[in-house]
Length: 267
Image: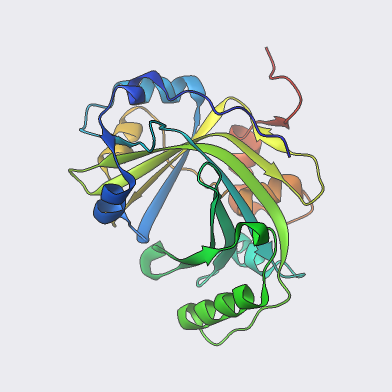
């Protein structure tokens, strides 16, 4: 599918000092973490980030600070992964491939919910050419990982049900050892379907330990509160209106304007 052109970094973020990937991974990998998500109009996000005074650094690689991501999510014919999330079940899971488009590197990832809503992510390198399917080896890894995390389960077959694309800028907050991401041009697409883009808004996600980080507190002080949004589950609910979506109804109705990718934004 066609992708929106990657925008420049928000002006304030472009002036912050850089952090390299190796240092970010060493200092704030946070594969076990608490995620807090915010859906923020683009203009408000620029204003709020420009007044964020806590020391922060921006991930930079080869002179770039914004990077294209591509994810493909997999589920069973009964949509077990989605349904567990929709009904708020414990020990729910997500299965996806994550591709870092600029470096042409892919991973197969399994995400589960641990104690106290902490997200645990495990992953292995994956062939780029297999990003939209699960190989036999990939399915074996998924089932072994899920069995270790949530009990003796076996899922299959697993097929792609949704893809997402977006442009991401990553912040490192060294004082708290936390990080945050800002995703723009977030696009959802069903297999062989029409791509839909989040219109004039960004998804801000903070990733920290159990305590809120400084960016959380700054967002709260500016009237922005966490909301229920999941690129997988909310995207599925938006593109499949027949599915149960109680957990995301408020986000879908009030805060998540979508438009067809090739349709111009409203003036």
